[in-house]
Length: 308
Image (cartoon, rainbow, N blue to C red; front, top):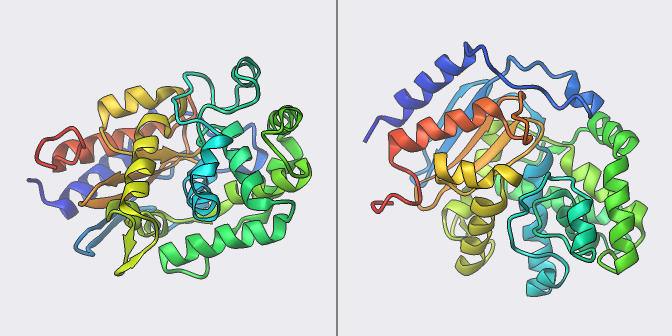
């Protein structure tokens, strides 16, 4: 097996110089101001080793990666009743598709597309946006072991002023009863959770419990069965309509965000975070995906590897 530190350093050095970097998410004005030149990576192993390279300690907007932590919060509060609101199937459509939502009577395919995450936000909010975002933040801070993690208010404001498609999705679901509370409160939670800023190091630390069967520092965050199921959803739904290609190339449960971050999990081995703001046409980090493909191959970490 390859040396982890040397492998990470090599990947970071080469991808920092890559010419094809994708396009930043300029439809959100604050994200459009971020340079595509950044690349960061962090790996936290089951043994507690941390390997960080490139811009791995620079904070960025985690965007849809927050949907993993919001789902955990909702499951801890409501249990399997969450699945009455959202499904568990890959979307096969764009992350903000309203056509699919119409065809399926207002029930989102999974909690990682925008409509599904908005429905999960509604479950957490219960009409109280301030308490809900405080709970999501508290959970992330605990998982990462870092109380400094917070919402980037400029990004949250930028999203709230331009998120017309998300508002349409929320109001459409409200007409079906998929969203029960005030739409404004639900959208406030959604926009703020997406605007949480973290570094790769912080994000990799926050993902440790999914690597370790729901455990963190000897305490159960969620049950092993629930951790397994969240990992399964990340593998099948975590990259929108490119989830199948990501599973084919990388073979790890992972969740992307249009801020250019990806959180990936090698069960029993490592929690990994990468960040490069340039995106593929499907909204996933172009270089981040490449980095994870190279790392998983070098370390033998694909879940389809019989030795994992």
